[in-house]
Length: 445
Ligand code: NOJ
Picture 1 (cartoon, rainbow, N blue to C red):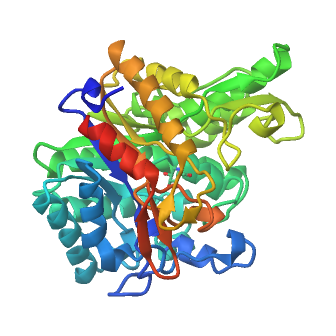
Picture 2 (picture 1 turned 180 degrees about the vertical axis):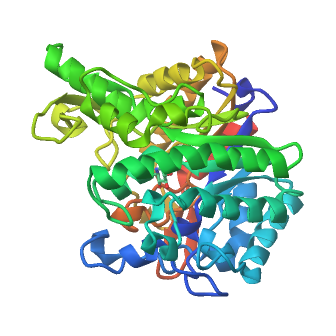
């Protein structure tokens, strides 16, 4: 496999996110996000880690963007911290926050890199969470204001926009099972959060379309192939329920198909009843120029009546003794290929970008070298699978590696490392891992 096999206009990118990288949590007027507050609660984040300083991208952005450039990436994907722009989530605009992203964007442009801006990568302003956060019907209004401010400020320079990062991820983890910020639990939080996110996804797209000339607009979906543990009917049905939840819940409304519905699956009934979905089908739809696909694992599930609604649970890759990352996530490039084919086959999907792809393996920094051979193999296999899909006609426009450097991995803290560049969080020293060098060689070939 050579880089040129993907075509000369292929967008090789690298992605980061504000909360995971910036640090500087209380500098230049930034307000607190739900993650700043969540991390202060006992037992929520592994080892009591906090995102307060992270990789200090806020002060080191010049060097870090230069590093991405030196590795050979054309695209720099980053997110805008809502609380830097609007510290209270709405109302007053913070000039210093606005200025910071101008500097980041200018740096990219000066280096000839294409900025891809994510509007929401999970760092909701805490002030809005106090008012209900994603469960509040006011969310649409708050989000629209944030998007409008960003579009006005940066729309002349930034043409590539991503509205939401993995809405399934932040609604399920943050509002259903409470593992992520803001740590809310239960169906009564989940249902409105889903609906407000599905609405915000489309509304954000419409705002960018109106405000930014020549914009290229997308939104990012997580996805996983779901396989039944056995061919027993109960397991097959359990896999189908999981598939609806993890794979269909957000892409289908965005395409004008409304929420997925399955006879006998009470969660989908609840979604429909709660959100009177038929009323909103048109408003949840937006004609995205591309969809972002983020596939981190395949899942095998079996029927489990104890689990509310979904009545399914995972049979882990470790237990099944299949290849997995240090997170226990199943490595399965063929299943990635299938998900790319499946998502791109939906009517109405235009371009596809793999807006994140990467893996956590236990890295060892020895004499200034991180020989992360497993990560290299992972990228090799996944990119070959992508090339296969591309060869079969899928309009794959780019691949963005997750992530430039080790960062704050949400509830897992700093020990779970996904970077192409190793970060020593005490000294902030960056060391390019072998996977970073491998990427550079590939993209140049
Ligand atoms: C997807 C999320 O967008 C990103 O923030 C996270 O770090 C990766 N998954 C890895 O878990």
